[in-house]
Every structure is written in C-alpha cells, then in structure tokens.
Image (tube, rainbow, N blue to C red; front, side, top):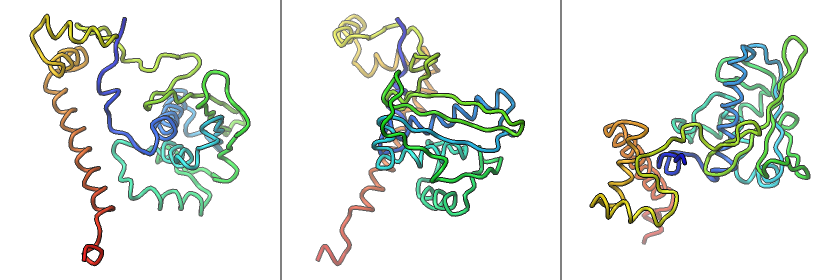
Length: 236
C-alpha cells in the first residue's frame, strides 16, 4: 500500500478553505497545463468556469471565484502576495479582461463567465467544477475537476488524490502501527516521520521544507497579531 508525504497534509496554502479555495485554484492551474500540453493555450478566445454543488452554494463566501481567477492568471498560491489579490480581482472585473497564465490577454466577464450552478451536482463529488474554452479555430474543449479536500484535486479518469504516493519503508496506515515501529526502532514519532520522508527526498530537503512551513506559520501569526492588536488609544 502506498503513502503520501506529510508535506501533502501540512503545506503552504491559501484560505479560507482548502477544498473551496486551494483546490479550485490548483484545478485552474491543472487546466492551463493541459491546454499548454495540447498547444492550445495561445488559441483560447474565451473561457468559462462552471461551479457545481458546494463550490457554487458557498463559493463566494469561500473565495472560490477569486481562486479560479488567480489560478487562471497563472499565480501560485504558495508565493503570491495576498495583499495584492483584491486589486487584481477588481481590475479583472472592471476591464472585463483576464491575462491567461499571465501571458495571453482574453475577454472575460466575471458576471457571465463564472457560472454558479447552485442546483446542480456532478456525480463524482460535491465539489465539482468545469473549465470550458472556445478556441480560435471555432472548436471548444472542456474538462471537469473535483476538489476532494485538503487541496487535493481529482478527475474522473484520475481518482487518486496524489500522483506522488509511494511505498515508504515504515508505512503507517493505521494509528496502531506508529507505536509498533517506534518501539522496534527505539525512536520518537517525529523521527519515524523523518525516516519515511526520505522516500521522497533527501534529509536536507525535508529539513528545508519543514523550515519553510515554520516560517509561513510564524508569518501568519504575526500578520494576525497586526490585524487584531488594539491600537494605543484602545489600550488606554
């Protein structure tokens, strides 16, 4: 049985929801990659995004519309300065244009080209979305994706949550297996995780990833303190 890395669970993301924000953002990136593989990206004349089920019902509240706009714009949610997002979304709405993958300017109407299908559910999963493009040759193309939670995205053809799932030296698919390995090896749980992570990358790379996560956590805490700390006048 295969496992996924701890860094597929604890990872840099964007809120407020892994399934309603991170997943749709990543799905948009995946669709652009598909278009690029088919050498169709530069042929796109129009794109529509259909949101189904839960993504439609709570999509605006969870920023699903914003996520797909930024994903289609070629932004990476692990790197983007989130303070710039509101202005960029406003510009798309105001000018009715989208810079597809940051390279190809196409017409885009927020009102008409993001469709909230609140009464429709795709059969595979409640969090479904469909990207539909119209090309310069008059043809069209569409693809459905499903945000299955935790930032994982699946399609009906590819139902596994992660292509990087592999066999680890000490697989822990049940909680009871963790203390058994720890007792056998004479190590702590954190050491066991570290040993398994070597199945994906070197020890140095794992430490770098862990530090990156820690720095992001500290930055989030600091940002929250800035927004929630009372002003000197309030403290008086």
